[in-house]
Image (cartoon, rainbow, N blue to C red; front, side, top):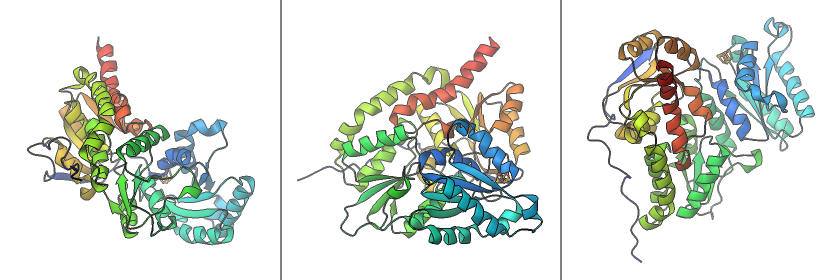
Length: 432
Ligand code: SF4
């Protein structure tokens, strides 16, 4: 049988992308959440897991206020706060921590996976949480597994907490069975509704078995090995990708599934790996793609030609800039990212038309000065910068919303575009 296998990129890259563009490296004061923030979405994702932050009152306040909705439910996170007796060395912190874990697991027998999450205080840094996790895992195996990672603001920004969490889980993944056919692993937290949409699409395209990591329950750890292909659904998972590759899995290089073009290219990377005929791929995706394109077209009037400035926050900035410039005709002025992983970003940088300043890291005062000079129509930034910039007459979008809103895939294209359109419309109304 002579089948034509999908082989072309969905749409052509610009004559000049940003692959070789110079990057402004900033190493000054930064305004970014720490990696503890990831607990806010991860605790909803893995439903029988529990996140025990070992930290200070500041850490407790951060996750309580960021995930405040949980006060009505039995929460799946808590902070073991170091008290003065711990800090003064009057008690043995390891013993205290063991007792706190004991009490927690007695009260909550539903917990199957316990994360010990490190933070910044120097007393916490001195605790070997990995050793505590290994000791506790051995004691409680197989009923509860205990894993440690760091969400400290010294080591991680915002979304890097998820990377640290998933990378710490990779050693627990079972080996794939030698007789298993090639499988696909989708890596990175996605809203359940999006996971279900992607699962249906992969099935329709004839790719699979498909598994998602993180998984919805601790016992469903996906197997991994040389017959596993994986697609990153989120751009901030460099350490997780490396850990999976060390287990033999093969990463499929692709743009991220933001926008119609990004989603098609992402799915197509899997279709290529699984040798899916082009006709089958096109037939399985064309309807959803047409819906996405129509949803995006409705926002073109409001967004085309508008200048946009991204402060570094979530590492979603480069894929978002690619999306808004190529599918909504917006003009990125500066695209900041807390960390630039050139390997993971190569397909995105090839598609992002040349022009914007690319910056990595932050020196917040200097970046604010550049933003004020540029006076963009829309600034995507952290909560702390949004209010002052609004007061100066600049429309802003909180970057954290782009993490908490389901935005990946075809069916979310309209919602994603409207996240950029709404602040502009609100400012227009204020000016009228
Ligand atoms: Fe603050 Fe560090 Fe705790 Fe994050 S981990 S809330 S940066 S003390």
